[in-house]
Amino acid sequence: MTTDYVPPKVWTWDKENGGQFANINRPIAGPTHDKVLPVGQHPLQLYSLATPNGVKVTVMLEELLALGHSGAEYDAWLIDISKGDQFGSGFVAVNPNSKIPAMMDHSVSPPQRIFESGAILLYLAEKFGTLIPQDHAGRTECLSWLFWQMGSAPYLGGGFGHFYSYAPSKMEYPINRFAMETKRQLDVLDRELATKPFIAGESYSIADIAIWAWYGNLVLGRAYNAAEFLDVTSYKNLLAWAQKIDARPAVIRGRAVNRSWGDANEQVRERHSAADFDGLGK
Image (cartoon, rainbow, N blue to C red; front, side):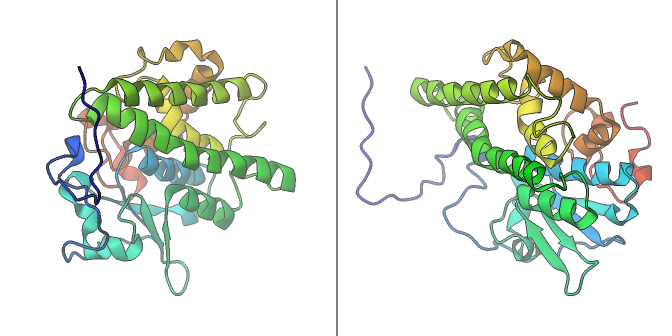
């Protein structure tokens, strides 16, 4: 027998009721402590962690460098969200929303802050004139998929991922509700990729980078231990696309940057030059 939850007239914050991330979740914004962000030698300064949203940006930067854009050299500083680094005063000044990733571009005056992973991808694509179609129709298709990812992934991460993997107890209704939506999204992608090599058409773009970081890693078995539960092998076109992107050298490097868990040879906790990748995967 279950008892229906009756919401109170006025909601109040219970610090102990939040699952795995209760220690960092709170209903107010702003900094909790003073902490100046480090600044390295390159114009682009990234403050991040190798979650899917963080991986989008490090993959993008490594792809730009692989294409010969030396101006994309960057310093990547690890922001440990489990310790509340995102609430330091310096980080909040770059991203008032206190979420990774956040970036400063010191190549312009005054220096430009950029936050939200999709905005950073678009900023870099426009700054370097690549990884986004240049024709109007192609650009529009690419941006449609970029914004699709930004709007859809919260149902995967904060919805399915939270209730399936991180909630204090398993609850049938939210798991079923968000598993259904996640599988619908996987089917959307699988159907699109049945007729074209990349999500926005014939060319690899920021749309692929954004979507792969979330949905590619999911079908590759790296997210929430849910690949079997979601029957991801049934999405054959999506899985083939994910494997193809996963093999790109820039993607391999980008996945490792600001990573602080897993195999030690897959971690590049901070990145300041290409030499930081020496020994990666060995």
